Length: 456
View 1 (cartoon, rainbow, N blue to C red):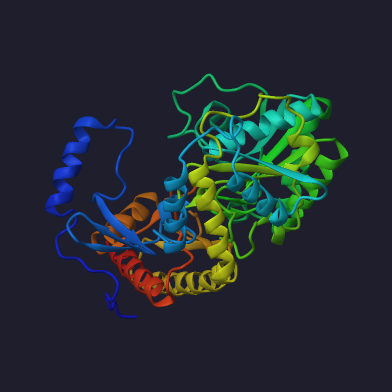
View 2 (cartoon, rainbow, N blue to C red):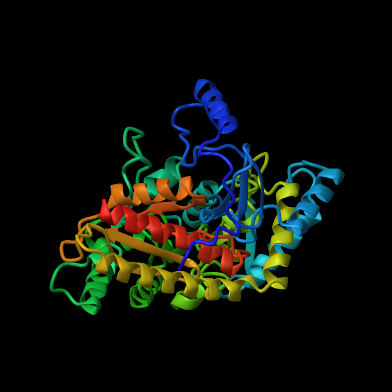
């Protein structure tokens, strides 16, 4: 498929002179840890298109790391933000409450696949939602232990970082970590032991979870199991339904709270509003963030009323949590998702992405002397990842090659991001409002540069 460059418009080399000057200024005043993935400075963005300070237009497949399911600067969300700011910007909900918080709670409670009476509470970041869910689970159960999975990512504050699995760059040198965290394997089917069937491997992981309650933490001391229905940073790995069924049975049997971290997988990205809906698991609590309010700082915990009500007065909260501007934006986001059918659209876009990755994989295999292949294509809805390897037999991760694909893609007008414990998975976090022809234009570019990388 030839590159038409209908959406992409490059008027300078990347980065252009204005972006170069601004990034030079950035290096002098911004902490080095906040390094730049895309070496340009944004000027404006709409839908799935980003314009930099030099007038270059990029297709954005990163979506603010999953925050922009309804796209950049959606007019309905922008108006909601403007109206909210014109009325008031802050009170602290626990001092003077406001309607947008209550309305958002009602709407998310209605959408959450949690049985029985439910409640909600809002915070600032995904990591804060994780921290507060753990606090609620501990207060409810009067137990301390938390089980987390290999490959998990739950944030960068102390408790969330402790629950996160990947050591570098998120944990190395930042200890000591929160106590009473226990780690169990998750079914990463593509990298299961040689000779083991998928069914046997999934059972092995379920057995390991059950065994952890014998050798790591007793059920009488275990408050919760936290999991991502589809792991994000871990490599875009949907958890196997049989594994989740076993997890749920173990949790119910032992009075352990199930916490589903849907901060990245929620809000329609997987083709259902929550990924849990299609994987057959019924959590006690669901965590939301990222696309809840187009990147404005708000996150939430939705769950069983008895669990959310367990902490006593003033033990949960914060000065800015559930701020009114973000709550108004979040309500507008739900309107857009409903009115534009973005949950269904995610499934349609996911098919496009999957088909294009299959085509790319075949072309890489057919490239003479290729040292780059797609070993696995996986994910739910539009949350699709392609795992690149140097050899399909050894499955040696192709991390540097994925870095090259992203860098070359950016130089040609396509912004993409990676994930995975080996850093070799190209992941799609696209705005769900992206037109199909624009998505294909971006995938054309990525396919072209992948073939170039494969040829060296």
